[in-house]
Amino acid sequence: MSEPVMGFGAPIRLEYNYTPGLASSRYLRSIAQRRIVGQRCPSCKKVYVPPRGTCPTCAVPTEEEVELEHKGTITTFCIVNLPFYKEIEPPYVAASILLDGADIALFHLIQEVPEGRDVTMGMRVEAVWVDDADLAPTLESIKYFRPIDEPDAPYDSYKEHL
Amino acid sequence: MTQTNPDLAPLSAPHILEYPYTRSVGPVVGRFLGALRDRKIEGIRASDGRVLIPPVEYDPETGAELSEWVDVGTSGVVTTWSWVHKPRLKHPLRRPFAWALIKLDGADTAMLHAVDAGDESKMTTGMRVAVRWRAQTEGHINDIECFVPEEAE
Image 1 (cartoon, one colour):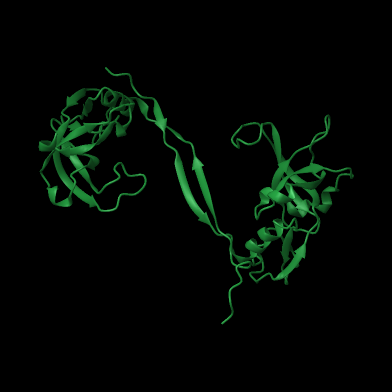
Image 2 (cartoon, each protein chain N blue to C red; image 1 turned 60 degrees about the vertical axis):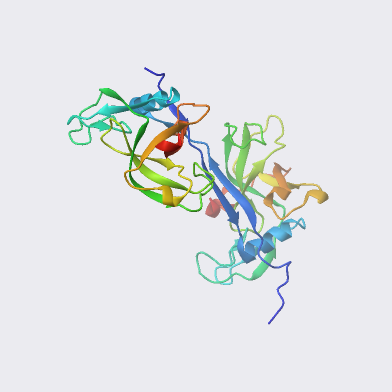
């Protein structure tokens, strides 16, 4: 009898051409200019970043643009121990970051955490950008977020955004 | 009509999503694939005496566990087929070919594989085809590169 096979690689590969739409394209172009621009819903006043052009709650177009701070608050995070994203050596922290003035959190990498300090919910962070020459219409233009010397934001200030 | 400003047009970029799955095959399909590595095709005998290709772990009628292995031929008969005019990226051949159900000699069920017939006019139901093995076999259904009309081998 032949040596039986236990299994085989069966990767699923999906090749898309991603078109983010008008609103997110404007946002991505603002990123390439080192700016973070969201949109405010005219009805509920929530600020979406990245903007999708409509408010999913109110179902109305969002047109008012709002430039956001490059600082924000970690609402929640996880420690990644598996090397599935090959550019970054684990362990590292991926976090939801609520930018000041925004009502929806971005997901990004946390780096430069000082020795002996733990990442926490409420931790204040700032964006670290790539060099000017490398700016492009992608969120990778922000290399990562890093802690800043500010007291943690109180839970009540971000509990609606978890 | 207003001119579209290229700076305001929607962006677009390639986006590739890939899941690196490994599929576990179980003892019966595992043995079938292992035999392919040795350029042999093995079926399994069902409770009613039929030889099933590809083999299955349990009898399709009674659910009984199956264990009697039967060597079958590497040639057989096309029972039905469909011509592919424009092969897609993941198809086994880069040129037009047929997907066919092939009942191998000694088997009672047909298995799906590709037939490299060159032209649709060469395909007929009932035609005889033979395995073309891949130069390097590894224990995968693709060890059978395809089937070819028997007189062509």
